[in-house]
Image (cartoon, rainbow, N blue to C red):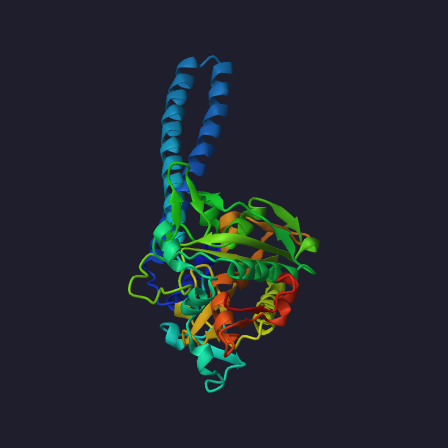
Length: 428
């Protein structure tokens, strides 16, 4: 969440930054008003506590002097003040809770160099790699759902019978290709990233730490009986890995990666193209994650983007990198670069990775700090995340791009070690 001290010190700048996202300043005005009232209440309570302390000393002196009646009168006054202090303390706590609740719905402020815009059409294409619209043959213009059915490697119909719309089932070499992509996504980052296998069901506090709750509860699967949520991304448990902890600056940056299943209700997706693997309720993903100092955020952001883009490039997939405009940022993000692959059969650009820098927005929610090497007060870490490899859309773009005239799929060389020597997926 936003830094209340910064809002208090420079409200106009913070409100202007949030307005760049197309958000109203009304919630921040409420926070400012509540905060001013809370500080007045706390100040009054502190003054009354000092008065009670003074009275207590005076009462003791009166008893020693044998002036019991006067002492009892002062004691009665002290009890009245104590009751008033309790009322003020309760009001201060309530105001603090109101402030927190409001701030939980306020998105992060965008980075200064984040492009302004009012929606996805204003995202900036940074670069396009390997895309030539006339370079695809007719055999590559077949959508992956038809390819998958023809080769017996994707069974959407039976998955829908089992679980409903926007579920899919991989079969045979299609399932093996899923596993190969996951291992490929993990292995290419083992040199610097520690592998974590976190739980896929987490508490409400864990979901709140990343900004997914409370604002986006309709998009998540909730197990109400147990008070648990199915994670929409490994970013959620990885953010809370250090929740409530203080790390030494010398230990930063901390680089993590995780393969998990991810679950998203995709509320409000009716009317969008949801055929095949384009939009899924459940999918596998390798996530890259980092904690760092504010000064190290730029370099770590670039590193995660480079690794995520490199994974796509080495699979021989045409792709582009987008610098998301202010209105298209995720709630927790200050700056995001999306990677999209081109799927020639679906004839669509498909987002396969969002690489985001969240400043201290998530760390403030999760209370993750670091101890500066030079000494002084602890500071909030910065957090970054990005999809190292999201399986379904990469799978889709891969089978369409590498489809051969005879209907087989040529397995990219980067995946050969993970396919047990299989270099082609051919019709049975």
